[in-house]
Image 1 (tube, rainbow, N blue to C red):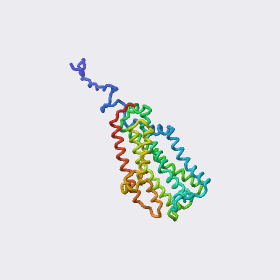
Image 2: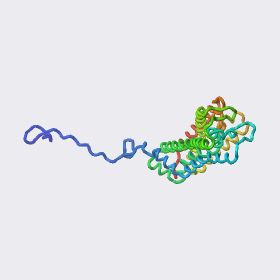
Image 3: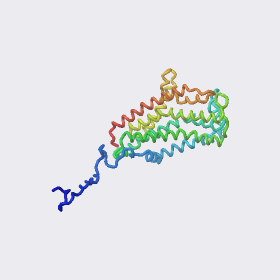
Image 4: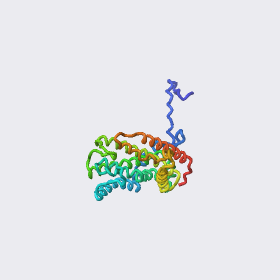
Length: 309
């Protein structure tokens, strides 16, 4: 007699529905632990907060935000600016208004101060973790290597962008307070309305960001290769110094066009009566090409690296 028939000869009862067993705590079909999701590991917000709390971040931004006010004080103490050469330069029109002052500040800072700031944010991000012996613990969390490197790269680039943009913004504020808002005087002569000049300044800042891509990418690569943040930052800054020295060797001729810093000041072409784009286009091509190669090397090296620290 089957289990579905009644003993008293009545109609057979309906079969009982099987109750599925409770889910067991085990790995997911892809082999990962239950409840583990790659997309939830090391969120950008967490990494951004971790980087912001470091002293070097606060110190770098403090220097960038104080520098414009120091330059204002220098002009107030020293009087009217003048260039040493006969040809007019940005220093000659630095006090003509807020935008002129911001352009001058960017000009004197792009070659070294901004280079150091960008190298600091991008060169310290991975090397500092290795130096503190916390990199292997992040990977054991577990955070996949590609995701860890991508999250750190995005945050480092974001801080570098904020650093580069914050300097001209604070310079506009300081220049407006000290020299007021006036039409922009071009070094070559003539003036440009403030509205038009602000659009050109946006182009200048955008190109300054692009020109720093080589520094950022090299610093990030060195951060992957070494456990010393100072070595990564110093290596990237050293590249700029060596490139500038080679760029001064006129005997190199056309080879200088391929140096990473040869087009660093091509944004000054935006201060002509008519914007000249050729130099900025060439500089963008060189900078982006170097950055893509260096970042590809960084990801490849980190994927095969033995993490022991």
